[in-house]
Image 1 (cartoon, rainbow, N blue to C red):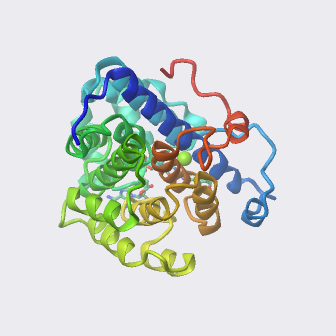
Image 2 (cartoon, rainbow, N blue to C red):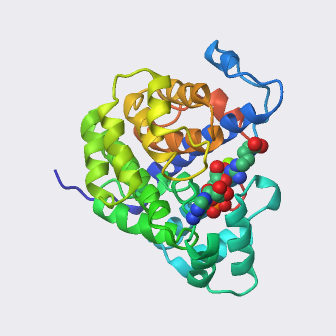
Length: 306
Ligand code: F2R
Ligand code: MG
Protein backbone atom coordinates (compact mmCIF):
# COMPACT_ATOMS: atom_id res chain seq x y z
CA UNK A 1 0.00 0.00 0.00
CA UNK A 2 1.40 3.45 -0.86
CA UNK A 3 0.91 6.44 1.44
CA UNK A 4 2.22 9.93 2.06
CA UNK A 5 4.63 10.43 4.93
CA UNK A 6 4.90 14.07 5.96
CA UNK A 7 8.14 15.57 7.22
CA UNK A 8 7.11 15.69 10.89
CA UNK A 9 6.05 12.02 10.85
CA UNK A 10 9.38 11.06 9.25
CA UNK A 11 11.25 13.00 11.89
CA UNK A 12 9.23 11.38 14.71
CA UNK A 13 10.22 7.92 13.39
CA UNK A 14 13.87 8.99 13.10
CA UNK A 15 13.80 10.38 16.66
CA UNK A 16 12.44 7.13 18.09
CA UNK A 17 15.16 5.24 16.26
CA UNK A 18 17.76 7.69 17.57
CA UNK A 19 16.47 7.14 21.12
CA UNK A 20 16.94 3.39 20.66
CA UNK A 21 20.36 3.85 19.07
CA UNK A 22 21.66 6.21 21.73
CA UNK A 23 20.36 4.15 24.67
CA UNK A 24 21.90 1.00 23.12
CA UNK A 25 25.21 2.81 22.60
CA UNK A 26 25.27 4.31 26.09
CA UNK A 27 24.19 1.15 27.91
CA UNK A 28 26.42 -1.07 25.76
CA UNK A 29 29.49 1.05 26.48
CA UNK A 30 28.91 0.51 30.21
CA UNK A 31 30.18 -3.05 29.72
CA UNK A 32 33.67 -1.74 28.92
CA UNK A 33 33.79 -0.24 32.45
CA UNK A 34 35.73 -2.50 34.85
CA UNK A 35 33.42 -4.26 37.31
CA UNK A 36 30.40 -4.34 34.99
CA UNK A 37 29.18 -7.82 34.04
CA UNK A 38 26.78 -8.85 31.25
CA UNK A 39 25.30 -11.42 33.64
CA UNK A 40 24.02 -8.57 35.85
CA UNK A 41 22.01 -7.11 32.95
CA UNK A 42 20.70 -10.57 32.10
CA UNK A 43 19.53 -10.83 35.74
CA UNK A 44 17.72 -7.49 35.47
CA UNK A 45 20.26 -5.26 37.21
CA UNK A 46 21.09 -2.01 35.40
CA UNK A 47 24.36 -0.08 35.83
CA UNK A 48 24.08 3.20 37.77
CA UNK A 49 23.39 6.31 35.64
CA UNK A 50 24.47 8.40 33.87
CA UNK A 51 25.22 6.22 30.85
CA UNK A 52 27.42 8.28 28.56
CA UNK A 53 26.97 7.95 24.82
CA UNK A 54 29.86 7.64 22.38
CA UNK A 55 30.78 8.44 18.75
CA UNK A 56 27.90 6.28 17.48
CA UNK A 57 25.34 8.66 18.98
CA UNK A 58 27.22 11.86 18.19
CA UNK A 59 27.36 10.97 14.48
CA UNK A 60 23.76 9.70 14.40
CA UNK A 61 22.61 13.05 15.84
CA UNK A 62 24.34 14.79 12.90
CA UNK A 63 22.58 12.48 10.44
CA UNK A 64 19.19 13.30 12.00
CA UNK A 65 20.04 17.03 12.05
CA UNK A 66 20.87 16.87 8.34
CA UNK A 67 17.53 15.17 7.55
CA UNK A 68 15.61 17.66 9.70
CA UNK A 69 17.31 20.52 7.85
CA UNK A 70 16.92 19.38 4.25
CA UNK A 71 15.09 16.03 4.07
CA UNK A 72 18.08 14.42 2.35
CA UNK A 73 21.80 13.88 2.76
CA UNK A 74 24.01 16.62 1.38
CA UNK A 75 27.41 14.94 1.57
CA UNK A 76 29.48 18.14 1.78
CA UNK A 77 27.39 19.46 4.64
CA UNK A 78 27.27 16.13 6.48
CA UNK A 79 31.03 15.69 6.25
CA UNK A 80 31.60 19.13 7.79
CA UNK A 81 29.00 18.48 10.50
CA UNK A 82 30.70 15.19 11.47
CA UNK A 83 34.09 16.90 11.54
CA UNK A 84 33.05 20.04 13.43
CA UNK A 85 30.99 18.24 16.08
CA UNK A 86 33.39 15.37 16.87
CA UNK A 87 34.36 15.49 20.53
CA UNK A 88 37.73 13.73 20.84
CA UNK A 89 36.85 11.79 24.02
CA UNK A 90 33.82 10.00 22.50
CA UNK A 91 35.79 6.92 21.40
CA UNK A 92 36.09 7.47 17.63
CA UNK A 93 37.88 4.78 15.61
CA UNK A 94 41.46 5.62 14.59
CA UNK A 95 40.58 5.89 10.88
CA UNK A 96 37.68 8.22 11.69
CA UNK A 97 39.89 10.43 13.84
CA UNK A 98 42.29 10.95 10.91
CA UNK A 99 39.57 11.44 8.27
CA UNK A 100 37.65 13.94 10.39
CA UNK A 101 40.83 15.89 11.19
CA UNK A 102 41.66 16.11 7.48
CA UNK A 103 38.14 17.35 6.68
CA UNK A 104 38.27 19.88 9.52
CA UNK A 105 41.52 21.28 8.16
CA UNK A 106 40.26 21.70 4.59
CA UNK A 107 40.81 18.39 2.76
CA UNK A 108 37.77 17.55 0.59
CA UNK A 109 35.91 14.52 2.03
CA UNK A 110 36.39 12.32 -1.09
CA UNK A 111 40.16 12.73 -0.75
CA UNK A 112 40.15 12.23 3.03
CA UNK A 113 37.94 9.13 2.91
CA UNK A 114 39.86 7.55 0.01
CA UNK A 115 43.22 8.00 1.76
CA UNK A 116 42.28 5.87 4.80
CA UNK A 117 43.94 2.52 5.41
CA UNK A 118 46.63 2.93 2.73
CA UNK A 119 44.12 3.91 0.08
CA UNK A 120 41.66 1.04 0.65
CA UNK A 121 39.17 3.27 2.47
CA UNK A 122 37.59 2.33 5.80
CA UNK A 123 35.45 -0.79 6.13
CA UNK A 124 34.90 0.03 9.82
CA UNK A 125 31.40 -0.34 11.28
CA UNK A 126 31.14 3.45 11.73
CA UNK A 127 28.89 4.12 8.73
CA UNK A 128 26.49 1.38 9.88
CA UNK A 129 26.43 2.50 13.53
CA UNK A 130 24.90 5.94 12.79
CA UNK A 131 22.41 5.22 10.01
CA UNK A 132 19.33 3.49 11.51
CA UNK A 133 17.42 6.78 12.07
CA UNK A 134 17.93 7.60 8.39
CA UNK A 135 16.30 4.29 7.48
CA UNK A 136 13.36 5.06 9.78
CA UNK A 137 13.01 8.50 8.14
CA UNK A 138 12.57 6.79 4.76
CA UNK A 139 10.06 4.20 6.03
CA UNK A 140 8.07 4.61 2.81
CA UNK A 141 10.94 3.70 0.48
CA UNK A 142 13.70 1.15 1.14
CA UNK A 143 15.18 2.18 -2.22
CA UNK A 144 15.50 5.80 -1.11
CA UNK A 145 16.80 4.65 2.29
CA UNK A 146 19.54 2.68 0.53
CA UNK A 147 20.46 5.62 -1.70
CA UNK A 148 20.68 8.14 1.14
CA UNK A 149 22.50 5.63 3.37
CA UNK A 150 25.16 5.24 0.68
CA UNK A 151 25.57 9.03 0.58
CA UNK A 152 25.82 9.23 4.38
CA UNK A 153 28.47 6.48 4.42
CA UNK A 154 30.69 7.73 1.59
CA UNK A 155 31.90 10.82 3.41
CA UNK A 156 33.98 8.67 5.77
CA UNK A 157 33.85 5.09 4.45
CA UNK A 158 35.18 4.69 0.91
CA UNK A 159 35.52 0.88 1.18
CA UNK A 160 32.60 -1.04 -0.45
CA UNK A 161 32.07 -3.13 2.71
CA UNK A 162 31.71 -0.02 4.89
CA UNK A 163 29.09 1.32 2.46
CA UNK A 164 27.30 -2.06 2.21
CA UNK A 165 27.02 -2.15 6.01
CA UNK A 166 25.29 1.23 6.09
CA UNK A 167 22.89 0.28 3.29
CA UNK A 168 21.98 -2.96 5.07
CA UNK A 169 21.20 -1.26 8.39
CA UNK A 170 19.22 1.57 6.78
CA UNK A 171 17.05 -0.84 4.79
CA UNK A 172 16.43 -2.92 7.93
CA UNK A 173 15.37 0.20 9.85
CA UNK A 174 13.14 1.37 6.98
CA UNK A 175 11.45 -2.05 6.95
CA UNK A 176 11.03 -1.98 10.73
CA UNK A 177 9.50 1.52 10.69
CA UNK A 178 7.21 0.55 7.82
CA UNK A 179 6.05 -2.45 9.87
CA UNK A 180 5.21 -0.09 12.71
CA UNK A 181 3.17 2.17 10.44
CA UNK A 182 1.34 -0.84 9.00
CA UNK A 183 0.79 -2.38 12.46
CA UNK A 184 2.33 -5.56 11.14
CA UNK A 185 5.63 -6.99 12.40
CA UNK A 186 7.89 -7.93 9.45
CA UNK A 187 8.77 -11.63 9.63
CA UNK A 188 12.45 -12.17 10.44
CA UNK A 189 13.24 -14.15 7.28
CA UNK A 190 11.49 -11.62 5.04
CA UNK A 191 13.23 -8.70 6.72
CA UNK A 192 16.64 -10.30 6.11
CA UNK A 193 15.75 -11.26 2.54
CA UNK A 194 14.74 -7.66 1.81
CA UNK A 195 18.03 -6.39 3.22
CA UNK A 196 20.07 -8.93 1.25
CA UNK A 197 18.28 -7.83 -1.92
CA UNK A 198 19.38 -4.23 -1.38
CA UNK A 199 23.05 -4.87 -0.63
CA UNK A 200 25.95 -5.27 -3.08
CA UNK A 201 25.83 -9.03 -3.85
CA UNK A 202 29.63 -9.14 -4.18
CA UNK A 203 30.14 -8.00 -0.58
CA UNK A 204 30.96 -10.02 2.50
CA UNK A 205 28.23 -8.05 4.29
CA UNK A 206 25.74 -9.54 1.81
CA UNK A 207 27.07 -13.07 2.42
CA UNK A 208 26.71 -12.66 6.18
CA UNK A 209 23.19 -11.22 5.96
CA UNK A 210 22.18 -14.31 4.00
CA UNK A 211 23.94 -16.50 6.56
CA UNK A 212 22.08 -14.63 9.32
CA UNK A 213 18.81 -15.75 7.73
CA UNK A 214 19.98 -19.38 7.76
CA UNK A 215 20.83 -19.03 11.46
CA UNK A 216 17.44 -17.77 12.65
CA UNK A 217 16.41 -19.83 15.66
CA UNK A 218 19.95 -20.98 16.44
CA UNK A 219 21.64 -20.28 19.80
CA UNK A 220 23.67 -17.10 20.32
CA UNK A 221 27.15 -18.72 20.60
CA UNK A 222 26.66 -20.47 17.25
CA UNK A 223 25.52 -17.21 15.66
CA UNK A 224 28.50 -15.28 17.03
CA UNK A 225 30.90 -17.98 15.82
CA UNK A 226 29.48 -17.72 12.29
CA UNK A 227 28.74 -13.99 11.97
CA UNK A 228 31.08 -12.27 14.47
CA UNK A 229 30.12 -9.79 17.18
CA UNK A 230 31.91 -6.65 16.04
CA UNK A 231 35.16 -7.47 17.83
CA UNK A 232 37.09 -6.66 14.62
CA UNK A 233 35.20 -3.32 14.45
CA UNK A 234 34.50 -3.85 10.73
CA UNK A 235 31.17 -3.81 8.90
CA UNK A 236 31.73 -7.42 7.81
CA UNK A 237 32.16 -8.58 11.41
CA UNK A 238 29.26 -6.52 12.78
CA UNK A 239 26.31 -6.04 10.45
CA UNK A 240 25.19 -9.64 9.80
CA UNK A 241 25.18 -10.30 13.54
CA UNK A 242 23.23 -7.14 14.40
CA UNK A 243 20.61 -7.91 11.77
CA UNK A 244 20.18 -11.41 13.19
CA UNK A 245 19.55 -9.89 16.65
CA UNK A 246 17.20 -7.19 15.36
CA UNK A 247 15.20 -9.61 13.20
CA UNK A 248 14.92 -12.05 16.12
CA UNK A 249 13.88 -9.49 18.77
CA UNK A 250 12.14 -6.82 16.69
CA UNK A 251 9.22 -6.65 19.16
CA UNK A 252 11.33 -6.52 22.33
CA UNK A 253 13.93 -3.76 22.74
CA UNK A 254 15.28 -4.82 26.17
CA UNK A 255 15.74 -8.43 25.00
CA UNK A 256 17.55 -7.23 21.86
CA UNK A 257 19.99 -5.11 23.85
CA UNK A 258 20.57 -7.88 26.41
CA UNK A 259 21.46 -10.20 23.52
CA UNK A 260 24.10 -7.71 22.26
CA UNK A 261 25.61 -7.37 25.73
CA UNK A 262 25.66 -11.15 26.21
CA UNK A 263 27.42 -11.60 22.84
CA UNK A 264 30.37 -9.35 23.81
CA UNK A 265 32.58 -7.75 21.15
CA UNK A 266 31.93 -4.15 20.08
CA UNK A 267 28.94 -3.95 22.39
CA UNK A 268 28.26 -0.20 22.26
CA UNK A 269 28.06 -0.35 18.48
CA UNK A 270 26.17 -3.63 18.10
CA UNK A 271 23.64 -2.32 20.66
CA UNK A 272 23.47 1.05 18.85
CA UNK A 273 22.71 -0.61 15.50
CA UNK A 274 20.24 -3.10 16.94
CA UNK A 275 18.66 -0.44 19.19
CA UNK A 276 18.15 1.92 16.24
CA UNK A 277 16.44 -0.74 14.13
CA UNK A 278 14.28 -2.22 16.90
CA UNK A 279 13.13 1.17 18.25
CA UNK A 280 12.06 2.12 14.71
CA UNK A 281 9.51 -0.68 15.12
CA UNK A 282 8.66 -0.54 18.83
CA UNK A 283 8.92 3.18 19.63
CA UNK A 284 9.69 4.53 23.11
CA UNK A 285 7.81 3.83 26.33
CA UNK A 286 5.53 1.31 24.61
CA UNK A 287 5.22 -2.40 25.54
CA UNK A 288 8.45 -3.90 24.20
CA UNK A 289 9.81 -0.44 23.38
CA UNK A 290 12.73 1.57 24.76
CA UNK A 291 12.04 1.65 28.54
CA UNK A 292 11.61 5.20 29.82
CA UNK A 293 13.91 4.55 32.80
CA UNK A 294 16.65 3.47 30.37
CA UNK A 295 16.12 6.67 28.40
CA UNK A 296 16.36 8.74 31.57
CA UNK A 297 19.61 6.98 32.57
CA UNK A 298 21.21 7.92 29.22
CA UNK A 299 23.23 11.13 29.16
CA UNK A 300 21.15 13.86 27.46
CA UNK A 301 21.71 14.20 23.70
CA UNK A 302 23.63 17.22 22.37
CA UNK A 303 21.58 20.44 22.64
CA UNK A 304 21.69 20.89 18.84
CA UNK A 305 19.88 17.58 18.22
CA UNK A 306 16.53 18.25 16.47
N1 F2R B 1 36.89 2.94 18.67
C1 F2R B 1 36.00 2.15 18.97
N2 F2R B 1 36.21 1.06 19.75
C2 F2R B 1 37.43 0.85 20.45
C3 F2R B 1 37.18 1.07 21.92
C4 F2R B 1 36.16 0.09 22.46
C5 F2R B 1 35.84 0.28 23.92
N3 F2R B 1 35.11 1.50 24.16
C6 F2R B 1 37.02 0.13 24.82
O1 F2R B 1 37.20 1.00 25.70
O2 F2R B 1 37.72 -0.89 24.74
N4 F2R B 1 34.75 2.32 18.59
C7 F2R B 1 34.36 3.18 17.57
O3 F2R B 1 34.93 2.70 16.35
C8 F2R B 1 33.91 2.00 15.60
C9 F2R B 1 33.58 2.81 14.37
O4 F2R B 1 34.71 2.84 13.60
P1 F2R B 1 34.84 3.71 12.28
O5 F2R B 1 34.17 5.00 12.47
O6 F2R B 1 34.41 2.88 11.16
O7 F2R B 1 36.39 3.94 12.34
P2 F2R B 1 37.63 3.31 11.53
O8 F2R B 1 38.82 3.55 12.34
O9 F2R B 1 37.60 3.85 10.15
O10 F2R B 1 37.35 1.73 11.43
C10 F2R B 1 37.32 0.93 12.60
C11 F2R B 1 38.31 -0.21 12.52
O11 F2R B 1 38.01 -1.08 11.45
C12 F2R B 1 39.22 -1.64 10.94
N5 F2R B 1 39.33 -1.25 9.52
C13 F2R B 1 38.67 -0.27 8.88
N6 F2R B 1 39.02 -0.23 7.59
C14 F2R B 1 39.92 -1.18 7.39
C15 F2R B 1 40.63 -1.63 6.24
N7 F2R B 1 40.48 -1.09 5.02
N8 F2R B 1 41.50 -2.68 6.40
C16 F2R B 1 41.64 -3.28 7.62
N9 F2R B 1 40.97 -2.89 8.76
C17 F2R B 1 40.13 -1.86 8.63
C18 F2R B 1 40.36 -1.03 11.75
O12 F2R B 1 40.69 -1.91 12.80
C19 F2R B 1 39.74 0.24 12.28
O13 F2R B 1 40.36 0.71 13.46
C20 F2R B 1 32.73 1.89 16.49
O14 F2R B 1 32.82 0.71 17.24
C21 F2R B 1 32.86 3.11 17.34
O15 F2R B 1 32.14 3.04 18.52
MG1 MG C 1 31.17 3.79 20.14
